[in-house]
Image (cartoon, rainbow, N blue to C red; front, side, top):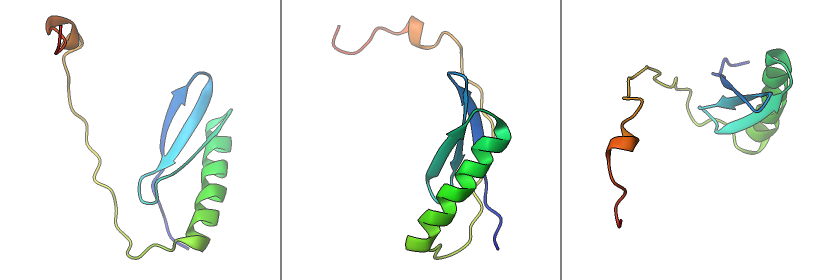
Length: 77
């Protein structure tokens, strides 16, 4: 057994779960279903592509200006 990371966000009424260590992703109607489906997808993936080494992703937060794109003219216009 190994512990992996699940990053979850809501998208159009579904929860999308992604595992940064493997690149696997799945979804579900609930958080629990999304994590269960991600677990199954990741187990299947790891049968074919075992982890070479266990690493933890580095996660942080950062700030952006909400209107940053509106103040700049797109390239080529």
